[in-house]
Amino acid sequence: MNDNEKRLRKSIGKKIKLARSKTNYTQETLAEKLSLSPRYISQLERGIAFGSANTIVSLCKALNISTDFLFSDFIDSDSCEYMDLIDSKFLENYSQLNDYNRKVVNRLTNDLIKLQLEENFKKQAKLK
Picture 1: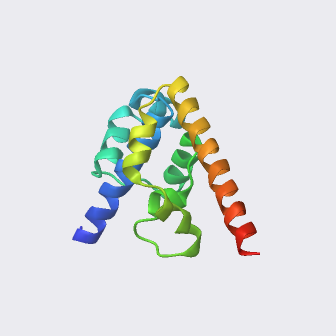
Picture 2: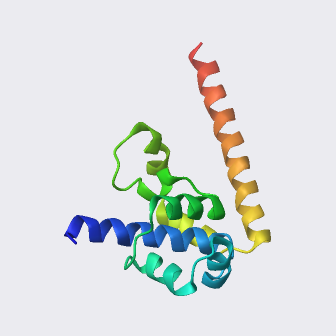
């Protein structure tokens, strides 16, 4: 296994773990959903093992993530463009919030977007 493949496996493993924690699944729960062993899930998350195409697709479905999310660090395409806008540390922190605090962050984000739109509208009105 070359260095590029090692980086790929580790990156994908971290993202699988992040998505799993976001869904509040244990390795055992995810393994059960996919008819895999918890040990294999652990190996995937640590980058020791790499799943087949079917396993990757099943993981994505179970964790409600896209394959773009898993491979975005290694594929330079327009479909991954939105991932550049999302800070991975923010996602990691967000995934650790409880439901109430996630709602607070979502509400705050919505309010900030509204304020930004209002500011942009005012700036455009002044230019006219």
